[in-house]
Image (cartoon, rainbow, N blue to C red):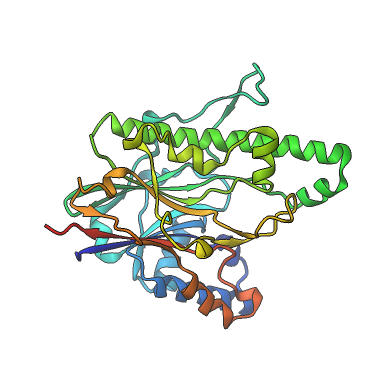
Length: 337
């Protein structure tokens, strides 16, 4: 099976809409996405904003990716994903018999299917659940169970946000209230995933868990942190540093500072903020670096896939750009004995 496993997470930007009434422009973008995926050559690809439904992902892997990847599908169509932006794990054909999806019922049993939320410190209780339920890939590699969780938080980045912010007054206040409400929801979604991770630590001493995907706090990240004490999703997901064995490492922790970004988004709330922002992440439990497993993630193993992404898109018109997100990868290596 080889001594390395390359894992990539990529938000492909509304892939489902791309297959609505395909014309020459859409086909050019489809061809570019195909090239980017095949050039990256990951063993496991976590695709965000993927196509909706099993029929479409089967067709994508067969017709576009030429059967070099297979989608890991749930039993009885059990995904619990709303909308058209689905989370898919694609694996190379050599891994198909070693990969499966954890039933969402098991995830919900270990965490919860829905939960109470209090807005603005209110005593009034609302219920919330994942809009896109986390998808958990179970991969048997090097005779070990590796769990890879695909996560895409719903940021509520509405197009009207900029105009409401710039309008000032009551419109701006209404936008701030809505944005904080969205951030509260997303924080509880991340806390729900932490509950799942903590449950795994009650089952095995060194669970091998990776979490990947798009953690989009929405606009004004620093503004809301400073003014309203709402901290970012990544910090909440990583866990408590004083529970070091459960703290999640980041694949890009030792990647070059100037290259540690995956999107170029101008923040309309904080226009002085560097538009090069890291929204796409891969994190993992300590067991993947402490030598307790048959495989290990070594220093400098994680990176943003700038070169492949930029080479492909530089040769294409803007309408055929593959995505507004760059892929993030990490290489896991069999531990030397």
